Image (cartoon, rainbow over all chains, first blue to last red; front, top):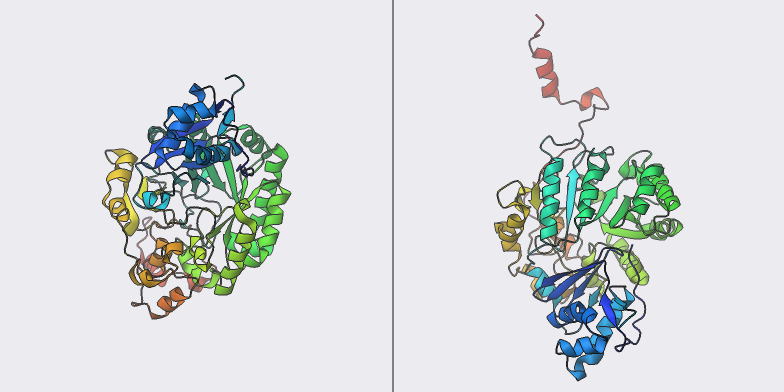
Length: 99
Length: 393
């Protein structure tokens, strides 16, 4: 089953996020492949930084803190927030209840 | 879907090949209870050398190590293998998701229930006409009813989003809306792919491939339906009409995809069962990974390819020269236009191609059926049979 991506909404960088449990990441020179075994959807993470960010989400109290930790500059935040928003819209990353 | 942060050209990475395929096609058997006229793998009879259950499991172990997240299992009709469900369960238990293609003949209500309950499994039911008349001419008498019955059972079991898989032909392009209605009726997803002159398809391609006008209709229809209709990235030659279709829009053969056939031979793609595209066999030392990473053929395919005469065409960046297998089996040079080039360069190339013999698809497992009429029988065979000495004497 393929999930139609929701419209890219404003991403809540201050919420706590994590990679969905059914998602596996395969590192590649350009970034990574991300595969969701439940939705059977494949995504391409187009930069190594985005891969690090996605893998780091669970370790930080907020999306913003994870972005800072992997070295994303403040002027780059909007574009990474957009990428995270697409990933959230396809259930690749999910909100964590607790920070 | 891709998530863009920097304007990196993912296509360049893919054309240079990855350490492991993104996904691959794995045909489990050449046995099939149908005899579709366009069968890409000329299936019918089982091959005695087909991989054993243990060999299949060892390939799955390897795919798990390589992080190949999913395989497209086909055939032949894969469900006729006695160990089909065992192989399927082994794959999904080892982080290799499965989508399998079937003609639906073995989808009983109980099997449908089982599939609906299984995570990591997707099902693709083949249908090449939105009416029995059109479908059965290609897939054989009764095959439409069989496929629809399977879809009814899948739907009744609660399986949502299985695929209805259609090969586009001259006879069914006009049925696109009807195919979509069938998929919608069963809460399934429509997937349409390109007819290739591969396998038995080589014999019917000239009469069955869509006309130039139909290609335009197909393109417009796809644009109107967007990502809701899947194409397996097989119709990227249509992108030369203008706007790119969803998908990678490149030939991934030997670069990001490949085929493992029932006897373990690894080909660049499922439509290229011919020695010219044979990279190796999984039974050789080093297994599949060594073939993928080191074979001469795949290494060569990952080098920059010459666009040939297409280099001067302003649309080359869209269509990338089209489909390698389509060119090969129609006798066209690989560094030239696709036979179905939407600008008409392929038709011209076909008209002026050299040589009278086309490369024949190999590994033919078509069933030898009794001849319809006595005069269809090979006269040499008849002669031998008549003149053979009787052993009983």
